[in-house]
Image 1 (tube, rainbow, N blue to C red):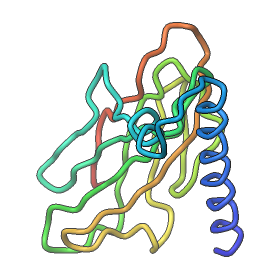
Image 2 (cartoon, helix red, strand yellow):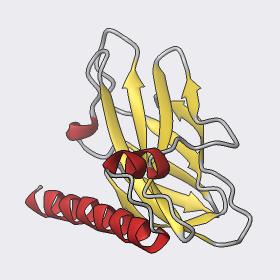
Image 3 (cartoon, one colour):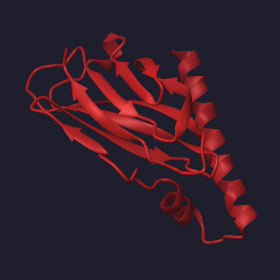
Length: 153
C-alpha cells in the first residue's frame, strides 16, 4: 500500500508540474483556476457515463495535453447492499494506455476491461470506488475515452 501511495503521489506531482510548464510555455498567467478549467475538462464525443439498475460509472479526463491524458473512472453502487465484484469496459479512443492503477485490467486494442481486484474495491451501499489510467495519443485525430458498460458479474 505504501508503494501505491508513493506512486500515486508521484503521478499527482508530475501532473501539477506538467500543468505549470504548459502555463509557462503558453504565457498564461491567470492562476490555478485556469489550470483546473483547462486541464480537468470532462471527456466529450461519446458516452461519458453508463447507468444500470445496480451501478453507475463515469469517466473524467485530467492532465490532458497534446501528447495524451490521464483519466479516473468512478463506479457507484446504487443499491442497499455491498457490491464486492464489478466490471467496467471502456474505450481509450485514439490513445494507447500506458499506466493503470487499481483494479485488474485487460485489453484488446483500445477496449479495456477492468475488474475489482481486492476487498478494497468492494463498493458499500451508496458508495463509490475509482480506478484510473494514463494514455498517449496514437494519431492526430483525437477521440475522447468513453465508458462502454458497467456490470456486476
